[in-house]
Image 1 (cartoon, rainbow, N blue to C red):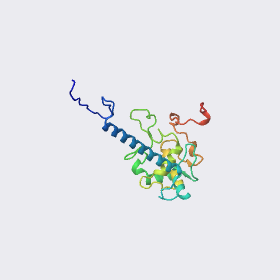
Image 2: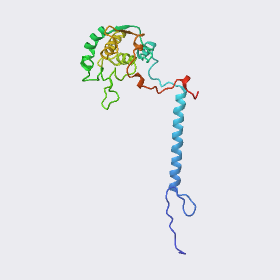
Image 3: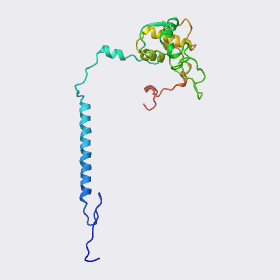
Image 4: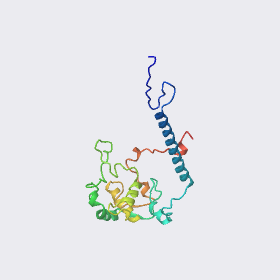
Length: 211
């Protein structure tokens, strides 16, 4: 093939037969490098601003009163329970007025969740997970009612009313007597039937063999 011209076809990122990188490949490589550096610089800048704790000039610092309004969680051991008390009789009146329309007169459910019964069905294919059959701690009932019930007016109940409603729902499940009164000391002591079937995902530091 002496005396004939040889056409060289260029592909991005490939070297020509004459040992030179194509102009297209060089341009793409350079563009990718510049884009990567720009992205890294942007991320670094955001990280710097975040760690520096600079203000964006939005909003204001929440007041202690505002924080207290949201700091209402209750732990399984009863930490966070407020002062007050309520009994089954008071809870029955409140339940019929504010809860029965959704959960049924006796906690049987419909249109919303069933609250009572279902014992021994938790591990069935169609098990009934109620407060009595499934929930591991009685304090969880107080926490949930306090922050989310009634559905149309959450956080409208006083601590006394929440204790009373909790007492009545636990009574419907046969877990407290008809004359029971609940408060911050007695509520955490109630043994829920399904407690032993829950396992904590967190290992206490003192029991961690790796430490």
